[in-house]
Length: 436
Ligand SMILES: Nc1ncnc2c1ncn2[C@@H]1O[C@H](COP(=O)(O)OP(=O)(O)OP(=O)(O)O)[C@@H](O)[C@H]1O
Ligand SMILES: [Mg+2]
Image 1 (cartoon, protein in one colour):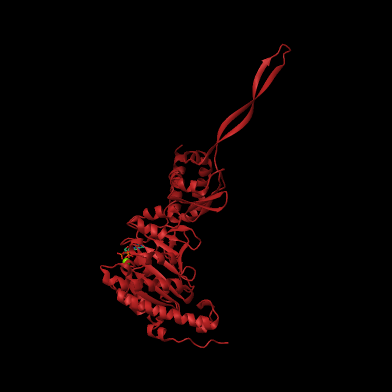
Image 2 (cartoon, rainbow, N blue to C red; image 1 turned 60 degrees about the horizontal axis):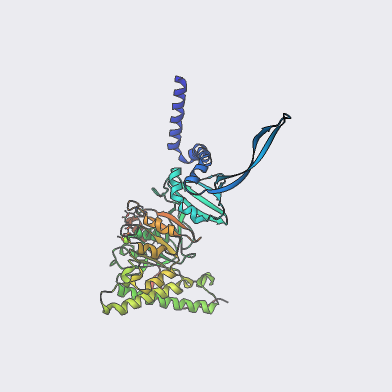
């Protein structure tokens, strides 16, 4: 008896050390098979508890003993009976993932993926896991992606992307890299309350874009305190609304020039031009977007209108001519004027950090799944950098940026200062002759 106890304790100790030493192999070899068995075994009870089962009428023929006739023959009677049974959605074998597991279910008649999304929190509590995300890749099927523990508590760096205009800024909760790719999604809206991690994300972009052959332009409406240290790598920096309007005029001039080049070459956008004459792409980083639209009195009206129209024009036409926007703001509400709503419509990239007002979350993520709004409101202040991100696949994800200190971004800006295209030279560049 004593030996058995000692052996059991030693086995437990070995398992605990293994789990601590290499969680991934422990998960695949020990924890996942046990989990899969327990999930399949308990599915009936859990589906019932979470309201995902349906009552069905089943018909049975039951045999009841009949009478013993005088001949000695027992006559058996068959009775037609109606019974009500609970049917659960059919569950395939759960498959292990990096941070948990995923499983596909066949929905019951009349069920939609929304029914499973409504039950997601109940499922997570029943299974004792961090979160359950619901998606549907095929009619009649739903996929539950289960994360056993929050993968965004600590985010380690992934290798940087080598593609032009693509930056790996953090990790998605699925474990995949969180990439901002301006060529796929040209304009971004990055919202969040103070200290939620907006500038950290802008720092990550600066670090990622600094070594690339792109021009960076800063609109820092916090009076320049955020972007001034990165000046060596910025081709232009505006720190007041008046400077922003001038810089927006420059961007529109550049856009008109690039339109001319594309028209002459018969190209629809700069990426169809031969590499020799392709103008350098420009990424415009805007911090404190709301400051562009706020006015204390009527005297500021014209300046606000000019800034708002300029930014909207850049957003509308910039994509084809290699001008991309990344707009950060604490509060992005329709009360700032129609210019903001129109700009939002042009920004297909959406990032919503922790927000204080539901209006900002609504404005940023409103046209996504309502569950994305709930997830944005649930971001804790203790986890700066966590955000809800609209992916290019139309799905939304929880994600967290890497921590990038101001010093790291400043160092990257200084190291790659030689890559900075000169703004005056960019503006002076005349359409060059198109090779035949
Ligand atoms: N991804 C992250 N991981 C860890 N810490 C982070 C992360 N992002 C931000 N932080 C921490 O949160 C602090 C606030 O971040 P940041 O300055 O980016 O907020 P912000 O949204 O720009 O705030 P404000 O609106 O006041 O400028 C940072 O100093 C940093 O310590
Ligand atoms: Mg900031």
